[in-house]
Image (cartoon, rainbow, N blue to C red; front, side):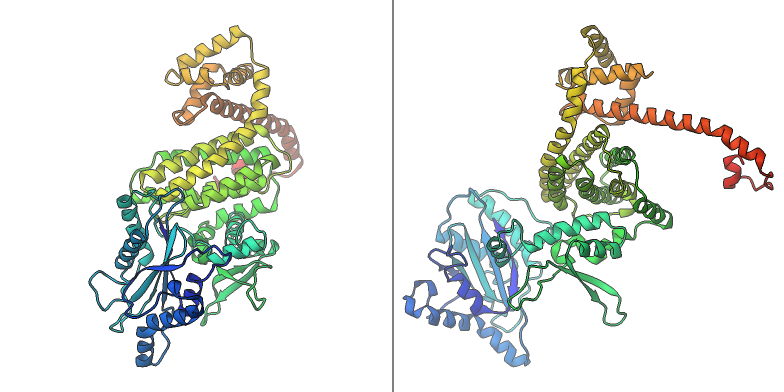
Length: 583
């Protein structure tokens, strides 16, 4: 059961909608199921058609009477005096009678402070039903005694009451809210998107692109520049005294009001963590050294394999931090920071990954946006390394290394599982569910990335005798997981990777021991496949290190020749850069 509290200032307009045919003729039999008190007032849904408009005006005047009296006494308008709360059952829930809906309405207005039980001076309200699965509760938020109601936190209180009602009426139990969810698109926004043939409303579209821009940007200036390059209109909000930017709003080029003016949404209206203050917390986390590194990353291209290796390493480090954390507030703040940085990395991965993987990764990133926000305030500095690794992916050269991509995605799957469990352990039901939804898409991308390389490795599997020897090494080195590893369909591919590592001078038992220490295998559905990517990454890194060492050795004669051709420098203090280089 989902309540959605909002406010407005036109009682007559809302009543016209509630008792009208709906924007797409979806309203059936609109009528009042409950009300505060209506002596002599007609139900607009139960009068002849020729009396309908008169009944709506009469009801609006009745509901607004306390509002008018307050305005006369104070000599000014009462702002946002119309309180509106649709309440909807979940898909698949049983049919509720008018009597049951009436009781739901009474409990909602009581719990929110609009009209508590037994309070004869409470606000005037009605509950209108015009569909099987929901009602609309409307109230004018001035009490009979002229005071405003004490309804602070009414949305949260309505949610809590709905959880209790679900239990008592045997309805589907929805997850409790935590005030971190983004604002739901309104009915008119949804209707406009449908008329224009768009998949998402302007609000949702702007939210997704703002998250992607924030993931790629180093600071707010670059954030706004990226949005502008996407054709999004950016309107800064300036402080009245200092003239400094204190906020911002975004609009699409084709989302306009009746006068043809763009409809702007503030960052906080898109999502709580897209407000300018929250973005500045992330952009301002790096010190001068880190900022310099970020600038270097943005101004030069990097090797694709190196970028994915860096991402894989930081994902594994983040996994260790998440799984090794405690319930201490400071540790939770660091884990929440890893979640925020991981959300950015997913968005950047969706841009940098091979084309055939991007749709699933982008879906995973969009789903994880909800898991990125919780009531825990993030210590963003703790996740600077993971954030920088994600931005490095944007500077990768056009070449791709399938092994490193698959390995990084495997590590991302592990981290996502760990974050889902972390949220679940702390009662973050909305975030845990979003992480699970994201996991479906990320696993699909990881499996798609892994399939070609695994098939190639399996086709080159060593002889049965060699596989038996390698299987014995698995049983001796990783006995707790040996059965699952050898039963994994990826075992032939792992046997090939172990044989290749052995040829490169890395004995199977030593290789397996090193790999098993990197991270637990309990949460791996396919442990042999996980070991394949760990082994392939480790082998490639070892080869790369050897190549760098060889290049360094070959450069020494040239350096020595240069040293003899130039005058000897004056001695420098021990520890200087020149001394450390040996010049």
